[in-house]
Structure formats: C-alpha cells, structure tokens
Amino acid sequence: MQIPFHKTHTTEVELNAAIEAIKSGWLTMGPKTVEFENRFKEYIGSSEAVSMNSATAALHLALKAIGLKRGDEVIVPTNTFVATAEVVTYFDAIPVLCDIEVDTHNMDVSKIEALITDKTKAIIPVHFAGQPCDMDEIYEIAEKYDLHIIEDAAHAIPSSYKGVKIGNLEKSDITCFSFYATKTLSTGEGGMATTNNPDYAKSMKINRLHGISRDAWDRYTTKGAWYYEIVDNGNKYNTTDINAALGLVQLKKQDELREKRASIASRYDEAFKDDKNIIRPFVKEGRTTSWHLYVIKIDHRDEVIEKLKEIGVGCSVHFIPIHKHPYYKDKYGYKNENYPIANRVFEKSLSLPIYPDMSDEEVDYVIKKVKKVLHSV
Image (cartoon, rainbow, N blue to C red; front, side, top):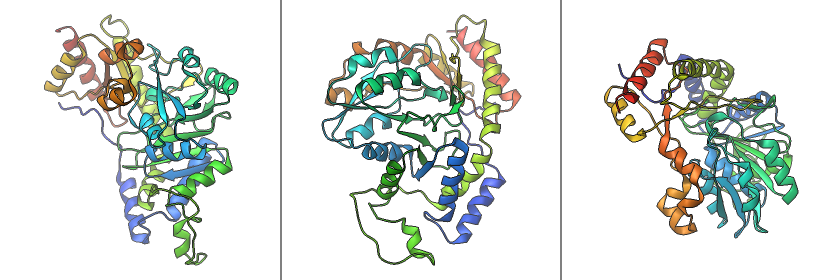
C-alpha cells in the first residue's frame, strides 16, 4: 500500500466549477473572485476579505497596509515556513525570531517582550498546524507597546480561538490565509486577507493589482470605463476566477472536511496514547484546530522517515526553523543557541498523513507501520 503525505480533496464538483469559470470568459479576476471574497468573509465573520494569489502576497500587502518601513522590526516565530520572515525583508525591515513552546510549537509568548525594541512595529503569530496561538497574551503585549498584529493563518481554516473564528479576532489588524495545494482549502495557488478595517482592505485591494485605483475587471464590464490611475507602487498579486471557482466549492465543505481530519487525529491519538516512543500533538483549552497537520515527536526522526518511505508511508517535517537556513543565518546573525526549544522540536518532529480522503484502511496502515518502525530503530 502507498500512502502519500497529502492528497488534495477534489471532486467532479470542483472540476465542473473550474470548467464553468473558463466557459464564462473570465479567466482572470472577475465576478467569481468577488463572490468568493463575499462568501469567505461571511464564513469567517469579518467585514472585509481580499483575495490574492498566495498567502505570501497577503502577508506582504498586510505589512504594507500597516505602514512597515525600512529598518522596522517584526517579531515572528522561528518555527514557520520561510514566507513569514521573507515578507518582512521585502521592506528592508528585520525579522526578529522568537523561540516556540515545546507542546504546541507556537510562538512562546513569554519570550516576546524581551525581543521588543523601539524599532518593533508588529508581531506575526503563526497558528502552527491550525492551533491558535495565545492571542490574549499577545494582544496584551501589543497594546502595551503599541504594536500591530498580523496573523499568519496559513494552517488555520477553520480554526477558532475561544469561540471566535480565526480571521475575525477583534484585536488583530489583518489575518492571512493560504489556499496552496496542500492546505485545508485549496485553489492550487491562492490566499486571502481578512480584516475589519476598511482602510487596510482598500490598501490591499489597490496594491494587489499594480496600484490601480479601481479593480481592473470593472473596466471591462458595462459599468466600467477605460480610464484608471496608478495611486500607489503596487504588485501583481490578484487571483483568478478559475481559482475563485474552486475556492467557492471548497469553502462550502470546510466544516465537513475539518471533521474528517479531526476523526483521523482522534484515531491517531487513541492508537498512540500508551506508546512511550511517541509524543502526540497537544491542543490547549479554548482552541479549535483545523488539524491541517498531525505532528508527533519521536527519536531517530530521520531514520524513521526513510524506513516509512520504504514501506509506502509518506511523511514530512514542519518546519526547518528560519534561524537554520543559511541565507537568514548569515544575513541577520541568528545564533542557534538562542532557540533551544525550536531546535529540539525540529530534531524530533514528524508530520503524518492527515487528509480528508484517507480511508480507515489507510489510517490503520499508517498506525501499524509507524509503531513497527519506531520499535525497530
């Protein structure tokens, strides 16, 4: 049996939606994009939603909306995909890395305050694997030092914090989601920024399409006109109606797909609960996770990955910490010893398959093979 690490959930419904979008004649951003934004903000509960071609683009324009400038500092967890730190460097600003909690792999809020200087502009909490960070504590710090909060919610649809969906927390400035091929809502490539601040939304809408003063697709409708103005130095970050058509279908399934992942997580939990060789994921009280990832901690991680690969079980590692990457280490002088928990977590972390279309037989196969390999190394 071959179990891939991930398999995107797509059906005839997604296929037909994409075909319909192509047949409509709108291959770029158009009415389907607007509809997707409207449905998304209704689902999340936010007043604004701005679609883009990636979460990286969303994070970039979110930082631009809050006025990030050269020399500013932004606090990010070292345990994240590179995009979280990368977007900070677009402004010649400095990503300041924070160590993580050993149990959730999220930013350790007890370490944040010591990282703040008079140059600190914002904090980017990353909801690792879909579990929300300690947002109340982060907000308290942000209010004390007058800092912006941009949430990296690439893993966190649908997730909630104390009963409120991620993307609609009152004290966050902007929240950014990913619709990459492996994410819980997939449009192949894509992203979305949600906010309750209309000025931030306006800034992101303008800057996702070259700084044009109006949505380009409007210029080609009966309501549109040929004239436009460039009002800012923008980017080419818009999504397409084909992507949006896929997103509309997947959005309707989010709660159902989340329950399927949660069911797999429960089966893993039950199977591994008495195994002293495995540390299972820990979810804090008051959080609902999307279960984008199921990450265990084990010894001999690299050897286990290779053995599982040989017997047909795909796995992955999330993440190689930012401070370990040569470019960032060399440019910003990050020292390995400053991130002891992230180092320990990285050495032991193994992400198991957890996608909605996994069969019971496939889940049982993963459990059986993980146990067998762990007791043989």
